[in-house]
Length: 456
Image (tube, rainbow, N blue to C red):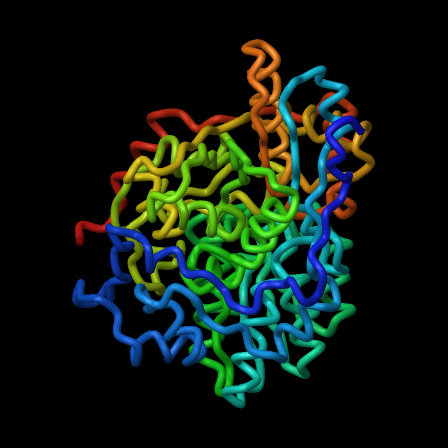
């Protein structure tokens, strides 16, 4: 190892961050507020507290506090699987014959298999502290539902999960992990809720979407005494909790004396991407350093690259507040691709604002290309990546090959958000050659955009 950089760099427990970082505090243009669809006015803390935990509402609305202390109970839980490693992908570099230096922050070293546990334990903790009986949520591929069920089991909370129907059917073992941890798991849309029954009547045989599942989870929370709704992505509070990823990566790079040039994350609702880039974006916002930051999304659900920047409902049933974000329309039902965690119709309002301000880039990639990258990575680096993470791998490989052509010795960081051991149906279809690429037409998107609310 000529440059003496280790394969894996860990922080010590003493070096772990003890505060989350809030990017919004350093943003010159703040994300637009959530709006009440009934009157078009910004949602108040009181209104949001009917759905979310009180402390989480404070975090959601706080645009000014840069650093927020992590409660000791959450830090103690984090220490069961954190700090996570910053890994130098030497084998991938060799396979690509690139002068680029490739690193990944690995978030799959916990039983839930992904980064989602970072926010799940925080949200469950605040629910428990408030004295609630339990929480409701949605999940796409199942990483968030798995993480939340673990956190709720640890704290003794009930957990009701609405899982997007296509993922419920494609990923039965992730569903069973949730049930093992005590959660109830319902395929969405379902007959259990008013909004679910309405969606099924309008779209019989639908494979579902995250927007559908959100509607059902919110309705269940509002109608159940002692319950609140929690969310695994998109919201400001989630990006805040996930900043632990970027803070650790930033500290590890500092320990190595290395600065990344390009930072890449997969993008669905924004939790992983926002968490990974947070301290680096903070430096960029403050004028202290510069980085190329790339969001990678599926071509089948291209909210940043082909969406409209507008106020839209966060859910298909239109029971949630309006958020200004890059969106494909709340009624958009993406194709049943295998990156279930990246099938949300919109993007975090914070990341949407950063993208609109041209502080980061976005690209979309096709499913077969993503799985080709996943297979290449698995064969040389020894980790089977989740389909979601593999979008970032695809882009990292592309950037490394660009460096091979130009001779530039850039340092690339990407987020490996989780493992793919429950995604073998997808890998089977790729290996069998039956996986296809679906890209929505301009006409399909135009029809969806036509349904955007005329507000804001």
